[in-house]
Image (cartoon, rainbow, N blue to C red; front, side, top):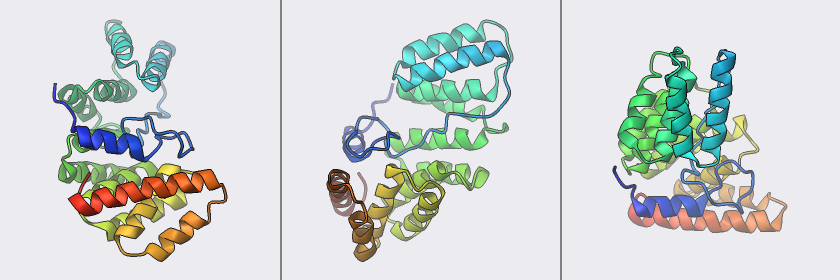
Length: 235
């Protein structure tokens, strides 16, 4: 099993909350990235039961239990749906079994969840500090689902690591307009604006936040991220 870059993991934990809506919570392993694990695909009642349990276990960071349920479902002989492969990929990714996760996400390429599959593969590449590969995967996710704010955010974040702050800021503005309530996206937008030299607009966004605690938390997160990206070219 390949161990993730420790500096990358620490930086991620210190920067953004996954999707809690509060900048005070910094506990997720991939807080920059949206998983988009939900889908509207129809499923049998048995599949719905199994996969709902699995989804809940993954959200509780109980990947081993999730994989056990997925293996149990596979033994029923039911057709394995795209949602099965998406959840399997997410569980394997959370367990840092990257090779197997990549294979699971690859199963989605010719399904209605192709975008989620590419997004998952991008998260694997990002976790291994391969930002060029990550950007290519995230771009394919955006190509398949152009109005998905999480995918735009993920592509932009990869572009920040490739010193392309101008493109990143444009994508993050789109993502922010699509999902204005996301602290994750707002924070990345401010980071991109500063890196592209538009500190006036970045400061205006920060100053517009009325809650003092949330505003101060955002300043701290942005300061650390900008320093890391500016000095090393990547986190």
